Length: 512
Ligand code: ME8
Image 1 (cartoon, protein in one colour):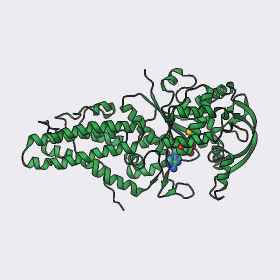
Image 2: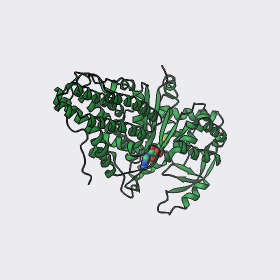
Image 3: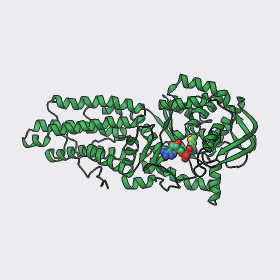
Image 4: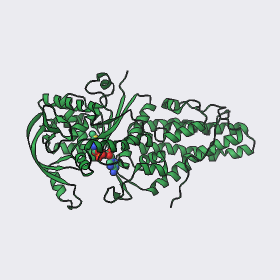
């Protein structure tokens, strides 16, 4: 069996409930997973939660809970996102699981065996919120931030195990050179390269001042640094170290999707750990941008944190999914606002797609008792609708393979606009008046085929709406069984099958 396509999200901290940022990465990963399945690949899609570390321990304490009680109470909010947002993850990993402990201990031992771990003393600063050791330059940058806005940092002096990160400076630079696709988008690679060229110091990978973590094998006074623990989830999730068959089937990961905030951990530390342990490196780390809310940074103190449960309640999962991936080029930053969602719904979903489907199916109900008509002779215009679909499919596929969601959606919506124009110009209502049944049937048949193609392509983005449209088209098999190659066969909707116009797919919102 050929290797599965393996896609991951970051594992999220359970010190807080999910917000739009978490939903964003998970939705993006889901669209990739669904699209890869549509191409006929077997796919493994992993998400989960990061449950160890000082931050979780402190948050639990201040809530009068034990860390595991906190984790158990918050994790369901993350797990329930899958149902809420129609996420098709194959597994959900929690770093407090036994399988993960075994995996972290194993990779730690391998790195130790490679001679890359030594005991020394760490003296410096630690940023608890980001669970990161702070370098001299970072300290200067932090000190430049006004004290009330600065993340809480603390001075640390303790015995610590170190990882010989410095040894991997050259091998990493070589890897980036040989595999420039390792970090995407491309402009992010430059940031990573200059960070590494700036010099890598050995990394403290254990702590002794708190206990909430996986103990260092052989020295339980120390717990393993939370990032060493967390990054390892990506191999635990595919069976490391015990299930070799599963591991070989899935590893290396094809894409680790992450926010730009945690690129360094994924593009520098993680590959260095893996090199040391003698494990193949993931193919790509893709860092996406950051959402602000109504122009402001999202933060608890500003009280503007966007709850995905509320957005879905108001707009539905499909609209949320579509908006997040259409609004900003994947990789760049963007701004979230309700007015921006409403503009997309009214302009693109209701007017573009919804209108095309409802008027077409309405006319088939009216003129052909709901049965998809037989086509007669195809004219140039009708053939163009087909040829444009095939050309569009190629571009769409290429853009999806590049993880350029917004481009793929623009390509698709340009085609929808083109088909809407074909409807206007062919004016089926006039053909009906003129009793030109042959032309009328051919035109409506053509439009229905175009809708069939569009439906298969929107399925990864808007699964509920695609299923609804598919049912209304009267297609007998489930849309879930359809592949991209089926979209390339012009004639998905068969003559005679029964369509149904149904209720409005995307009700318009009042722009106020
Ligand atoms: O960093 N805009 O977990 P985390 C876009 N546990 N995406 C955002 C966002 C925003 N405003 N805010 C958060 C951690 N994200 C570690 C990861 S992985 C081995 C360990 C998304 O709960 C984005 O994907 O802080 C970011 O990388 C992630 O949430 C951070 O989640």
